[in-house]
Length: 93
Length: 373
Image: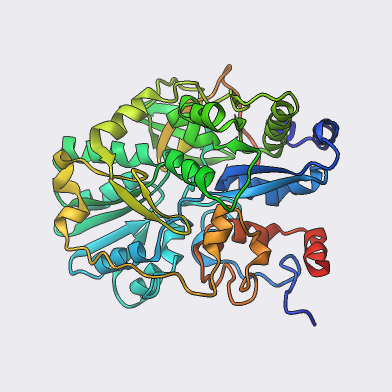
């Protein structure tokens, strides 16, 4: 048998620290940020929602109002998305 | 799934793929580098590579912040984590990166208080809750992550929290791209530029690539259609003999980036004269350290850091993979001795690492290609 086992065929044990968050996203952030909608806002902290999960992010770097969609990374909103407020659904990237 | 489907439509993908195919000059080989690990992940997860015509090859760049941390820095981190009274906080992936003497997860098993956080702000909260302990945050990441560390430092100062320290390992993308452009063993035709880094730094810093090196760069989003469209835009530039910086990800990225984020970084951090990158070696002015004003929060001031240099394991070819010289599966230990569960090299640790991404999503056709080589 060839030494190289097809990666897609080999059994894959979930890596504990990675999978806790989501199988498909790197929590190191690794320069990936996710879009989420602001549902409430209080003193520099916004509560954002994405696919039903709620998180607090700092909004010191952007001007936002409730309903805005922001790009979040490591607990901080980095940018506001263009266009009118929209609902975000779907799987984490 | 609303708002996701529109970026993943198979019909549109096929159209883009056909457009790209029409731009290929027969007999010419195109090498496009996606700089960012997030793109690498998207490309493997959605099989974007298989949608590109033959002759168009995607080369995976150094843009995974976990992957570029040298082993010696992990050993330094462990040395801090194993001190009395220290609570050592870090992003999850970083806990599994092997140093010369095991990883942080193993240090935790030996008794060190190592905790995973999603944000440096969480580390600051831990410091607030444990005034009798010293809380250290292992700060890594490109410009996407740096603002959150900067903001945390500003808050620590504003609140007068003195038991919080940052072990800064933030890196900057431009010197890495420059190093790759200067690397003799690689010939690239164009770049797919990082999307979220550009949210912070904007598109202007890339201009030298187009102007001085004559290579097109297109900043791209992270959905599969984003990457395909960016590839098409690079190919169109090549076909028309142009080299420009273009922005495919205009729904988020502004030309000037986020000035407030840049200001927060500039207020708290400054360039190091040099920093070691895994695979790329020492690159001048490629990483950040805390400014002297923030010395009270600087782990490198607070603690005696061993600063050991550890050579990468001989079998590991992360360096070549990071420079795009080798494809992940061409590494001798890929998928055998080195797997996401027990990584030898950093590229296998983070899901953005080229090796881990390929290991998780690798396509069968690629395997056949490798076997028949």
